[in-house]
Length: 429
Ligand code: ASP
Image 1 (tube, rainbow, N blue to C red):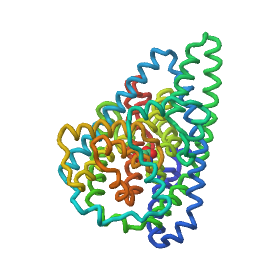
Image 2: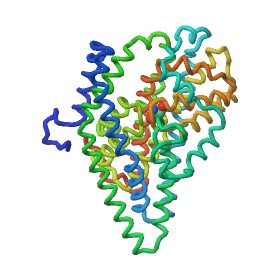
Image 3: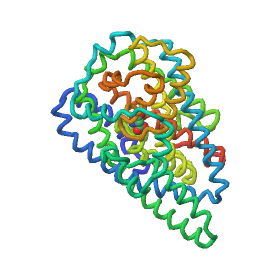
């Protein structure tokens, strides 16, 4: 799997994944539902492999990351820089979305009636999960696990929602912090134990990533096979607005941050990240992509493990530029469809709650849609409209997740430059 200069191009992971993605589209279109059924299990298997490594990877990565920072004071500084980046980049993303949705004005009364949701059992279940209420209270409660072991297994009452990563992160940060507070000899011994455990998880991650081309092909082929191109017609302008805003953020805002603040060549860095971005796109899950993202950032872009093992797991759960932007565009779109013009003050409420909703959203498929109830409630809009945009959520989710992961990686490069001059300062790929 190593991407050395001497390797033939077709042995390089990003080419293999690129080809897999190219093949998946015609495969899905030609074989439809039958093809999706035939290869669906392969995609699911790849997802299971990724999920298998993700919780121990996050736990050991954060504990060993905190230990390697060396002192609680430095952890505080690193944490403040990391969270500072998250807040700024997500806010910028929301503002891009806000600008575009006001300019394009995709919502007209009656648009929602054109496309009614099919009402399958899966869709019904998803709609049932839509949350309303206080974003902040919800976030704080999710942060503090009642039982950390249980949070590693599932969040809340519903096992389908997967582990509560926010709770796992909080516990891991405290755990690592407490190791740092131990006397020297014990601290050093424990630090090296966690370092080794983390190395084991990275090794396992490397093995799982070998299956990425096949997994990406199967996941993407199945999505194209089941969704087809049908759903894209009715809500076209809305989708174009989300795509346009995501594209501006990905092609202008994040590369500028990458070049000016992280001092890295954005193109070379993006190439190094290609496998992670492809995995994010095909899985629609920042958590599932996390093992690949860590591998790309460390091995292909040469950023120190000390920084990435701290910043990336946090980012996969907390920093979601694409989701934040999407919340803002979708809620304003729904307002337009309901004939409600939100004034400046109301739009600011959307900005703030969209930010909170993106922080609270889990790194799993459709989490952004589920969190939208919080933003809608904050500006007094009905929750019903969400059912209408559910039909096109998968493709939007794939795109916003890719941006989420891209922003996590750019943030890692930025923090790495602040902390230690960006290591080798160059990217391979
Ligand atoms: N699927 C996204 C992610 O994992 C979250 C969302 O639904 O917006 O990053």
